[in-house]
Image (cartoon, rainbow, N blue to C red; front, side, top):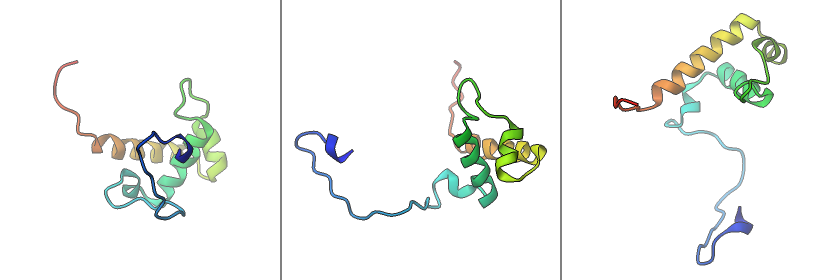
Length: 91
């Protein structure tokens, strides 16, 4: 990113290290286990089109049951979607 900066734009790196989401970031609203399931699901391609992973495959990686993975994914999705402020306009 730094090598592709536009002329006249100055960037300065203030610090490096791991990222910890702040309290307003949606990920911070998830439990540690939900974050683990989400990270695994994304890494395996669960949210790709077409879907590249199943609940069973996510369960195998996380050590959870397929049913528990499904429950976690539904709770994650509910948390994420409820954070969106979608207007009531017609499509």
